[in-house]
Length: 87
Ligand code: FES
Image (cartoon, rainbow, N blue to C red):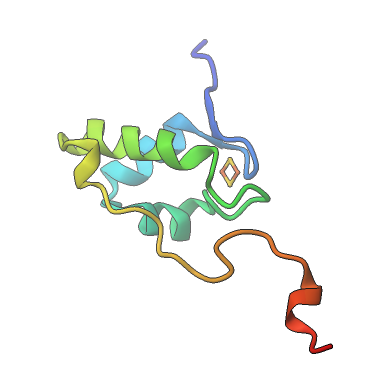
């Protein structure tokens, strides 16, 4: 029996599921996110992002630098809500 390799631990997504999505036409991190919810967990893709880039590059026969990073959406990092409140 083949061992299950988790690549996105926040969303419990396996390497096989990612490869299947790529073989079905996904070519970017954003497409993988829409199909599998990778990158939508509590770490917001900080953990799985580099792994997914490697898998995309390998499966699409590209250099990892050619794989576009996640779309950036503010806030870029966690902030305290008090910075939004006027004093
Ligand atoms: S490991 Fe994928 S979102 Fe956290």
